[in-house]
Image (tube, rainbow, N blue to C red):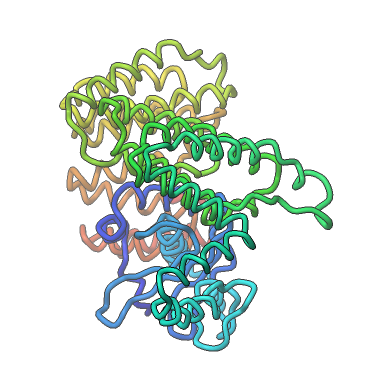
Length: 475
């Protein structure tokens, strides 16, 4: 038995938070986890495909605490790590074999986990750090005149150093216009560059995101948050253009750091709080490549209920203007309305307007087919009878385009029966679930449910007959 086997969704939510756990579950459902392996130490190692391909390692530390390492830029537990754990749990339930990782797996090098020589292509922590430490005593031993002369000489040899000195002087004197102008030109250069669209062998995308990040950070520290927000939409659009052009691998961690600086500017801007929240919403809805997750995090923080209420009203007005899907196959319009109404629900629940949530869900379900969301909200409100009626109604439409799968609807019915503590019905649903998709894990779950109401021996006989004759033991 693995040390990860005792994990479940509740534990993951406590570890990563509800939002990150939900995103991780989406990634796992979409098949984003690839080349899953177990290290010799029993840790989980995999690739996770997001806006980039990330190496992820999940392990328990010496104190028994769940930890993760990921190649993404997130400073805390990320959705990629959650996706890896959930994928492991799915494989365990399905009794799927998980191959072992070799001790020299490339992903361990990418995460700097290995103790042997670093790979120079993936590890930028080489002699440069040591060199900086070695030169420090030399710099300290120089007189002010010698140090000034040294900086001047270096600036002459390296235009980037000269440019950074100019930027620092401009910010120090309160004249940030020159730096803002250069930043805007650099951002436009990202969108205008076409090297990566022509000959991959001879040209490369030549934007230094590390340099851009340092300038944006300097602008934030200088108190120019409003200017940063103005630049932010241009930057995000430019990065989107790069990804859409097929040069996604050119968007490195420094590019994501640039977006993070823009998000940090929200807290320091002069905008009213509700306008800050709307800025975050606009960034999220315009983002199709997970560039703006940090803005989503901003909207999952605590904000005044009055501002949430204003935001909800603004979004409701926007929803009224969105076109209604003309058919069940109009997925783009349905998805657009569902994403907007999800954020409306998020806002309503944070300003004590929960009474408006279910009516909104009912109205939108008829327009976009989002019945599963309606059923979920009815269950959360303990309106089990209403939820059950909708489940049964959707069961009749399960083969229609856009309808939920029978397994998903059955899982919701199972959730209701558990909440009602109707263990006989739970056992019946587990038995039905086994006949629909027989597996060892489904058999064990059915046994546990049936033993709870002392009917296992009878049900077991029926199930064995079913396996032998392929005919259901009930009508």
